[in-house]
Image (cartoon, rainbow, N blue to C red; front, side):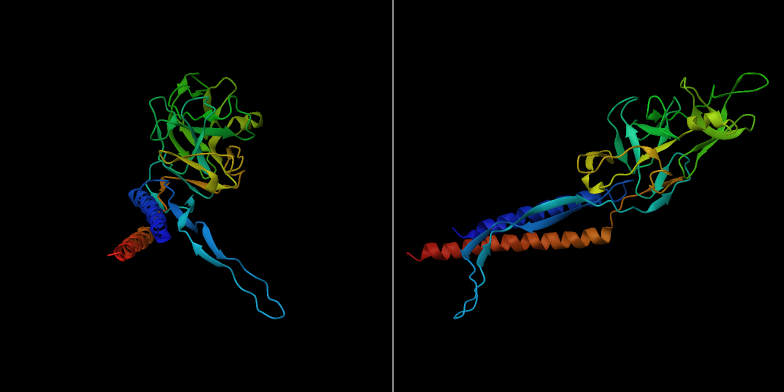
Amino acid sequence: MLNSFYTGVTGMKGFQTKLDVIGNNIANVNTAGFKKSRVVFQDFFNQNIAGPSAPTALRGGVNPKQIGLGTRIASIDTVHTPGSPVTTNIGTDLSIDGDAYFVVSPSNGSPVNYLTKAGNFSRDANGTLVNSNGYYVLGTNEDATLNPQPQIIKIIEDEVNLDPVTNLPLKFTSFSIDTNGDINVVDEDGNSGKLAINSTGKYYLNDGNTPATQNEIISIGTKVVSNPGGLKKVGNTMFEETANSGVSTMDRIVYNDGGQINSGALEMSNVDLTDEFTEMIVAQRGFQANAKTITTSDTIMDEIVNLKR
């Protein structure tokens, strides 16, 4: 049996995988925070026909004679280059200009956290900041001493601050998120400050005039991993840390050198349709060429079989 049959099959399988990856990239061209993938090939085994020999005083050296036996997938890499920012003017839409990732959790206090670049967040009925799947957006404080740590973020509108005269709850009238991930709030009396949480779990407006409470100010938490390529996609535009992504600790973005947070904008997919369509043509032609290898080998086999006639 001709080896070219099996060589052609390995090529067709490889280019089919490449087309699958390209198709997924194109399908997510408008997905916020999506990171494209690429396929890298490497050659398969080699059949040694003759080994090499060293040169001597009477004869020159001879190189090895080998026949390749096809190709295989070396890796399917996730490309973590930044996507283009799109302005939405929605206060809870966040993007990161840098290497950091937002941290989300499926439930309050869950030990399982996920990373994401998709910052299309919103507030639920309880005022909690969540993503489109209802996962909590996690926050941290100045020295990561929140208990529990990390902490969900509630931008609630009642019982957050007491009027110094009437001692009645004041509501937040507006809020904004700055480039450090701090949440700036304004109450009904026009007092402004940063969202904070005290030791009893009560959220309040911290005006910064009490140094002892500075560590109660809560910020959007972020993580920076040493090897983003080691992150595992888990769906819903989220990533799971693995043993090869490196150990990371959630921190304020100003401390982990992860860049800056931009409010009112989203980081879109990093898929470039021009590149994807070009790669699609290459994959299609590669598939066709390998199919031609098989049909040509089949024709040769027909000739061999017909020799006995």
